[in-house]
Image 1 (cartoon, rainbow, N blue to C red):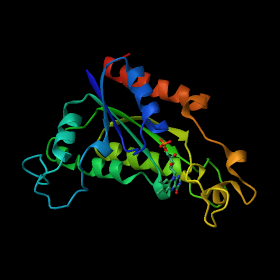
Image 2 (tube, rainbow, N blue to C red; image 1 turned 45 degrees about the vertical axis):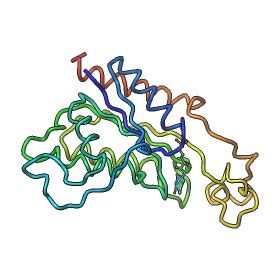
Image 3 (cartoon, rainbow, N blue to C red; image 1 turned 120 degrees about the vertical axis):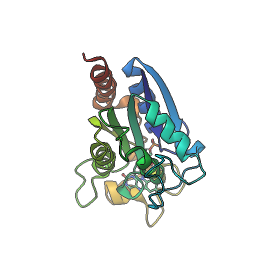
Image 4 (cartoon, protein in one colour; image 1 turned 90 degrees about the vertical axis):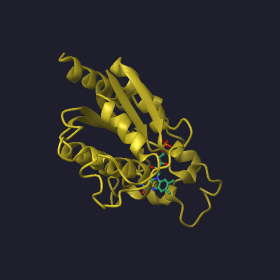
Amino acid sequence: MKILGVSGSPIKNSNTDRALHMALQATGMETEFVKLTECDIEPCLACLECLDTNECVIGDDGNKLAEKARHADGLIIAGFTPYSSIDARCKAFMERLYPLRHKYGLMQGKPGGAIVTCAIPEDCPGLPNACQNGIEAVQAYMMEEGMNFQGGVKILGNVPCLTCGYGDECATSGLKMIFGPEASLDSVGLSSFENQQEALRQVEELGANIRNVLLGG
Ligand SMILES: Cc1cc2nc3c(=O)[nH]c(=O)nc-3n(C[C@H](O)[C@H](O)[C@H](O)COP(=O)(O)O)c2cc1C
């Protein structure tokens, strides 16, 4: 049995990627990791040309990725949250799995999960619940395709202003937007997935749950 893990994070070896690798490993099964920035994938055209063929007419990597999803026994989608929604690559990937839906429901019953990294901590007054939004987007895809959603893991990542070079002086610094007017590079600091005990536990649990669904454990 094989589990496909797809990351929409553009950053090399990002928190999102490392968490996804750990979840895949926790399944104890054969796995494949796909980084969407290494693929060419456009969103769905809503042309419905895939109705009878279960294949998309767009000549990019979308059909290759859909084939991987079709032949996988489980799927984990991992993304980040620009403007507090699931990233565009993950969204395009999910849209391009639409050809697998028609007539046969080719993803039905497969266990899946979400891993989402965001910069806005949970319960930040006045700001969107970024990780929750991202997880709900993946959950909606999996629910609407009849998959067996095994849960979403929230990871605290890093606002780009921490590393852009202007974080302490920029008038629109996300640091101050998220953490308040007194926030600075030093007071916030970089977040690493490996230091987040609850996220580590949940990532392991997600992998184990996917395995249990497939092996009937
Ligand atoms: C263009 C852009 C916009 C972003 N907007 C938000 C946002 O609205 N909310 C949020 O939580 N994080 C936002 N982020 C931060 C990302 O979610 C953050 O970089 C993410 O934690 C990185 O994940 P990684 O550590 O896996 O690379 C934004 C990042 C970029 C590049």
